[in-house]
Image 1 (cartoon, helix red, strand yellow):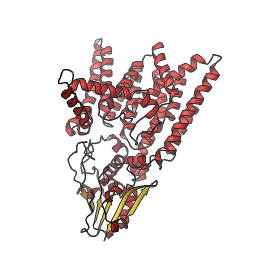
Image 2 (image 1 turned 180 degrees about the vertical axis):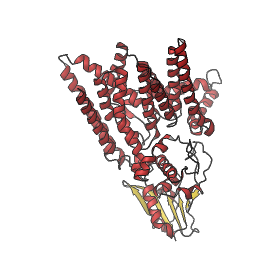
Image 3 (image 1 turned 30 degrees about the horizontal axis):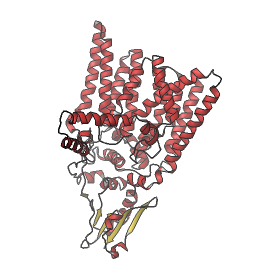
Image 4 (image 1 turned 60 degrees about the vertical axis):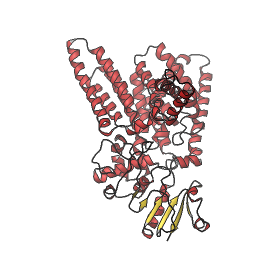
Length: 539
């Protein structure tokens, strides 16, 4: 029986490895600015011990003034040290973690429900989940944070079973690591804090138990203090700019309501905020988001590429039923995390998001695996079992095939996908390197994204040299700063015929008013048939 379990787990791991590496250089179609920032700052740490701005071993990476949390950057050091600075090493950490989700789900389900069948189903569903790979196939810190949340839950359940202090400490360490992984970590820090307090309160009766509980309380409050320390030091610029009440649309709507009906008892930030957050929360857990559309941001979704199949949704409903029917001991831990996770995006002004609610994939699949395992158990002796199982398997395979076909063969070919991923910079940097000595200045549009980071990353530019030049503007209304120039590069589009020995790089529309003699000499950078950058050289 044990060998059979190992064989099935190995099969799930093979699936996950294949789905992580298949067309890895084509899907996603290129590296985006955030990925380049993570990788270059890791490279800078390796070379100098400092980030791109010369800060020594920082707890936050200033980057685009969004002050990225440090876990992904530091954990990527071994990969970039071994493989160098390239697209694979930039994403290697998440690929490893993505594969590790498969056995992690097995062990977590085993601890939660002590059921081998359920645990194997959970690993199998995880290995085939497109929602998981959408993030784990590129460098995004939400993957690391989610891994730590699940590990924290795993060791919390282990602690409840064994009462061993080491399990309690390890659970707290993972929550601490999560708090330094992604901005959503604060939600889980709060949730686990109250979980720990509740558990310790129940254990606190008796002098000996009280003494042990006090020691564990010290651990919990130490974790909270360390987690929040960097917030006080660096501030919450990016988080503050994402809160729903910072949205101009929210404030404009409130102003319009008051102009039409000047009643502040009804029309105020509290009432309007409750409506705003609850609507966004409900959409985040709706069938439209989970089963049909997924994330509407083209970096993290594609039309008709839902996060789950209808078959998995059926298993999830069954799982909820059996959790209470069987009175599972740890059901509330899973359900609390499941219900809290959509708040990560509901409290922002942005559309339903996969990146801020990434843990929901695994929490959903935990419940779905439990439902599938119980349905299998109660129906296997029924005469209609084979027919019932065959129908579910057919539709499961149908939806999964459709999802993966969309992701691998349609998603990377769309023009909007190519542009959303900021493709073209690799080719642009190579062009500039080839022509670097022929020109004194390169004027490059900053209309989309952070062009400077691509030059640092693809060159790659010497970190020690760049740190002496790095100067970023203050944050704009979206919370991002801009690098105006370094070396020969100026990041704004300008065409001035008086500027000699200069190269002007813009998007095609940047040259709408250019004279015919300029248009006749334009060089073009294309990706997937899409014209991304137009280049004009002025001798």
